[in-house]
Length: 336
Ligand SMILES: C[S@@+](CC[C@H](N)C(=O)[O-])C[C@H]1O[C@@H](n2cnc3c(N)ncnc32)[C@H](O)[C@@H]1O
Picture 1 (cartoon, rainbow, N blue to C red):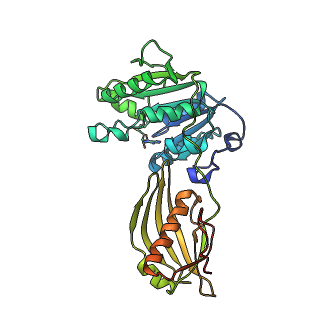
Picture 2 (picture 1 turned 120 degrees about the vertical axis):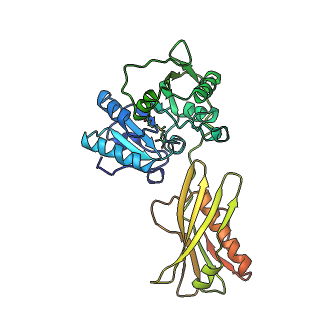
Picture 3 (picture 1 turned 135 degrees about the vertical axis):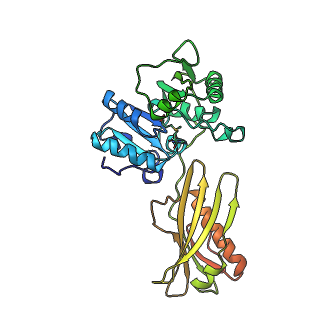
């Protein structure tokens, strides 16, 4: 892995072929929210037998950890800048994970923010679908209330069993102290260590892999040029049952006049910031497609974003005609 190398969920196939990415088949162990990477690097040194996947949403943390991984030439470590929920659901086959470590998940201490906590019943169900039976789940926290929540969720889950006689213990002296743990101890807080195991209880996979569709492409005819079309595109939010679309802004090229509509598509657990491209053909038709900026994936939400863009334009230009479309469930207008 080179110094700045890390993956994002959109870059890899859903699900990923971990053996190919790591260059060997080996048990897959995942650390969620590795922060400075102290624990991850120590684990990589101590457990050369496993493929170690580190997940972190903070880019500065990833940079720091990537430098450590690079310095030590730890080839069996892959880092991802991604939320755990997205990686587990989109990239990991059911029953494929041999171990999960979560050290000091953000406690979100305010009552109003409890729903932002990572570990709850839903997250444990997701973990239960992706972990192999017998896989270890190790969690540490120094936060009283969160410790209570974790203990309650684990205890009522039929899919996990404690490896200790109690839900958690106060001592795990054999392990390296994470950065957050060092701060907690220096400020007088008490770490709790949960050592659980995915048991044999079966679970239905209610967390399917995200779907991908063909690249979206719509050919239109409407009585406006690109500049005028750009003027009619308004920042809008569209809330649907499981998808949220936000058209952020429109930009026009000095070079050929084409438009780029910056758009955010949230289809939990996948979030994409994409560009919708609008250009004209010499014959006067307008083409809307997904700009190849970054690693856009043509999900149902991206198709919806283009469909609502066409609807928005149709409101402004009622004579708009769809000549050709690859949008899911859409057809070209028959009159043409
Ligand atoms: C309190 S810090 C602990 C960091 C490190 N484990 C330690 O003990 O020093 C929690 C970390 O989890 C990361 N994080 C929060 N939510 C996450 C998620 N959904 N997926 C992956 N990482 C996440 C945060 O960016 C942060 O670095």
